[in-house]
Image (cartoon, rainbow, N blue to C red; front, side, top):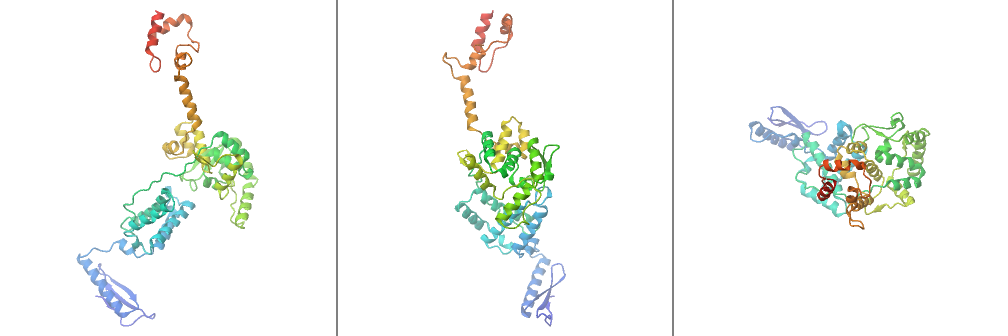
Amino acid sequence: MAGVRKKPTKGGLWQAWFTDAAGKKRFFTVSSRGEARRMAEKLEAEHRQIRLGYRPAPSSADKNGKRLFCEVIEEYLAWGAAQGGRGGRGWAPVHAHNRRADLLWWQEQLGLTTLADLESILPRAEKALRSLLNAGKTGKTAYLKAQALRAFGEWCKQRGYLNFQPLEGLAPFDTTPKTRRRALSAEEITRFLSTCTPSLRLLYETASLSGLRAGELRALTLDHLDTERSGLRLEATWTKNRQEGFQPLPHALVERLRAFAGAGEPDRLYEAAYTRNSGRHALAPRGRLLFVPMHTEKAVAEDLERAGIPHWTPQGKVDFHALRVAFINLVIESGATVKEAQALARHSTPELTMNVYGRTRPERLHETVEKIAASLIPDEKGVPRLYRQAVGAETESATPSESKELRLSVLAPAVGLEPTTWWLTATRSAS
């Protein structure tokens, strides 16, 4: 039986109660006695209908619909920092920062106050994403924004905070990159290293000979350098694939890295850079293996100009990550197997190594075509060089002359590019 106490509380509030669907007495307080009675009677009537089966019981999502959107975001980010990444590990700092920024962008764009505000947002969400594209952003940017809200929605569904996916029915975006990275040739890398900023040469060398990303190189310390196995030990906490690993390096480079870090050069360079940009020594990293500037793209652009290497060409652009692209292509061109190239690139599939990072070089394509042409196009006598070599016109036979008759009479007819008529003529002449 719903009711209200005869006197207010010391704080001036009126306490009321009602009997819920489970038969338990529930209490609440409001500022008005009349409002307390009306609410108590309404709630008891609703719960009586639930108890009699006239209306469904409120779901967990109904109870959480009034939670503040920003409050649930903080819970989601705390979960991600603790165990949201691969293998139950926490998110990388960059990913956590981007996920927060994307969700706050959605909150502002859609005017979200509570979780219940996410219902039926698809038309407005599509309009917000179209505004990004109209502003010149790429399809990949729009995809990442949508993915942030989609992942947040799935997380809420798993915990009963929502009973729907906010972006269900959203059509995919064209995520084809508008720009493509070019793989530097070995000659270009040599020229780049010989003219680059001296304090960055070891960084560029390590990136070109390991394929490690800027963030991974930034996380390396002297403890990660393995002089016995000649390489770098990689930790799952900061690699992109969230897996431990080992990246081999040339022995000479390992020795120079050990001397460089052992002398404290990275600490000195970081302190100078942080003092120059922020004036605070405390923020400078300590004990690092390499010095990685905060703005790698700017540093690479300046060193490319110093080396006379174009930043942009029809084959694509060159930035710091292009050193990883160059490394993977040099591995492929060295004759490594697909599995070996995949392992050195630390990719999950060979398709990613060969189709996403693999590049074709125009000069190598021309060289291949010239070789084919040399074997097919007739010379001044009208005979293709391939055919002339087949009959021994340009090369001497390794078979002694006295055994030629036996050789020609027992071999099966040639197949492929050698014409069968040649074999018949040679057989007849030998007999």
